[in-house]
Length: 136
Image (cartoon, rainbow, N blue to C red; front, side, top):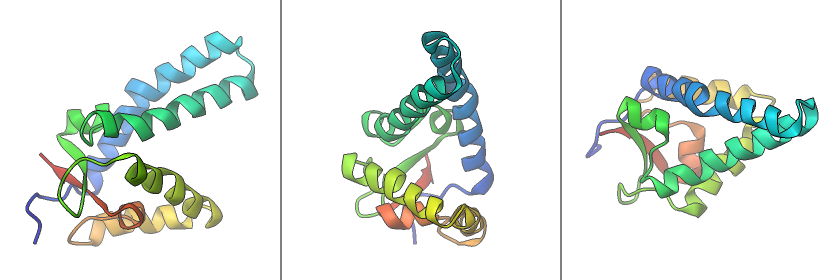
């Protein structure tokens, strides 16, 4: 039994979409302005800034991103319910990203289904990192 209520599929999707609109879109536009609109260079800068945002903001902001904060959900470590550290976020983002990549996105679909149907609402990257996404 969870001390906190797990966040389900739709609220997590909403948080991802908010992050994409509020953070991702402006980062892409800024990257295009800085690099002079060159596709490969602006894409690299945008991807790097987005990666750093997804990696560091939950560490700095106690498990929240802007989208998660708006939706009232956060990333928490299973062990103690505390915010994730650098190692946890590296596992969650980098290792899980490799798994999703080598399965050509199949693992992403599996993760979405897991969040939708599992009682604890944990995805593959939650299992890899020992995290869960909970409601405040």
